[in-house]
Length: 301
Image 1 (cartoon, rainbow, N blue to C red):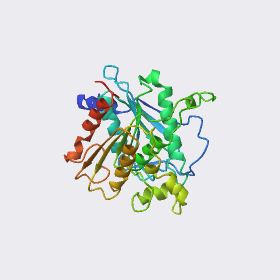
Image 2 (image 1 turned 90 degrees about the vertical axis):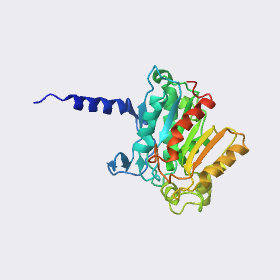
Image 3 (image 1 turned 60 degrees about the vertical axis):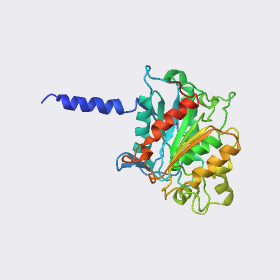
Image 4 (image 1 turned 90 degrees about the horizontal axis):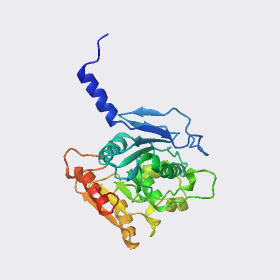
């Protein structure tokens, strides 16, 4: 048998260096509820997944020499029917890790009409990040959340509905807060109202005949408060799938409550551009976000 060539070894090293450090289950002993999906999970079209019935965290630890102490939970989008784990998850995590920000890509359970399940997974994941702060080199006061498209809806749900932990409980992870310290929202679904929100995401999360009270509950622009964290928005003016009004409504509510926010609406980019869009100006957003983190004193380097 031939020994592996230099090129083969180089490719293996590159692949390994770009992979997450490890993964762990959000609910290692099993979640208290089930999303109704019994089919096997499927990967397709790169690293997109569907039929997700078990939540996992893919952890990208910042190296000691670059570590800023900041961390971010990343929620990929996909209309609550799939999850685009690659360009809205792993690629963002790799970029952030290179800049000293520990990143955790969340594969959340898809709802299939069980509206409480994705946010339940995301809250638990943020708590788990804070519970592991010392081990992972994280400052527990610098833990944010990011989300793209429907993942942006999930992120903004956490930014408007969170808990501060239960110190008297028996579960050590539940002692920690689920409140994000900052948010990154990429072309996010915000509202569940007709004419504003993305109806595909709404139908998957709430069901096709969602009652008005449930629509209101998950129209996140209605739930901004003085406790909502500072937020950075990225979107394109020509986005026809999730119209800019989603972000604009949320931004306006943040301003009413005195919350720091920064919004970048690029003229071209469409929907779902993730980390890049073939040289269009929207490619600038990662560096803009990094500089915003500096302005917010989340990072100092």
